[in-house]
Image (cartoon, rainbow, N blue to C red; front, side, top):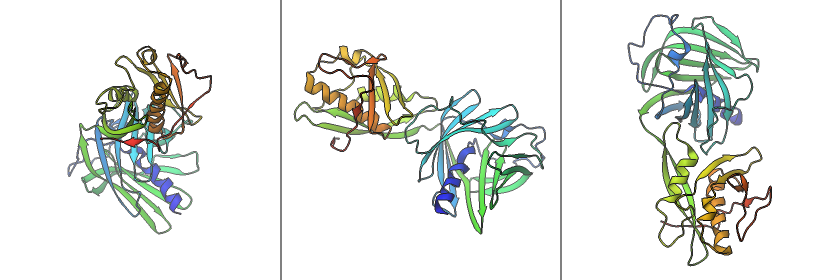
Length: 344
């Protein structure tokens, strides 16, 4: 049951985007002249906090990593996992089109899809409107001006009821706010998540380890850096800039001034892939041993970021080849973060 509840709670946050408080005068009239977009604003650089009851994973926070062309990618952290959720507002409906668990890294999934998508909210926004989901559940608008109380205020909300074989979920949407409350009911169990607070114009701050070689003792050291990401920031560019700055004293710089990350991603084979510009080689002044340490630092930094064990390195789309080291097609670098030493 605990695993089932956790899975349910990773679904609840799929709709969590908010704007400003709507206390008291949230509107008592039925929203027949309003659209889904009125109940799902895509607010960038905003942090949403939800207070949970009934389960340790019912509380969570939400950031918007990416937003473009009617799609929004959320980062949802409930303490048990980090979800990357992509929702799309198209025509008369709001749909979940992609979701990935354990997305501790930051990557743009706006172009990803996992089928036709699950309809979360659909016009007409009137009581009785109902649709079936692929898993056999039925979703129905069961109210259009329901009073809802949350830690962030009181709202007039659309109530959407999702019926399963042994459970049901009640979701409440307020105009200009988004989902303000969700309640899961099953066999005497009640778990709720309610909007607690909204912070505007704030970045998502991620702590990342960067690895550096030591010329003195042939060891590899790491430093933790906090990187602030705003909505639609390109992850590889932020990591590239941070790697070049504030190199610890007595340690070597891994990226030269003109080295650029052309591409960076986690592949479906479970390996991280990074493509660097030619300057990584042409501006490198190192013997075979030191070059090996530089490659190990690249593997540890970017493989570690994706929590994987292997990294494929290429240069401008071609196989890595220097005067000392040549990597064959498919040959990877092992990630070895356990042997590194922390430095201030």
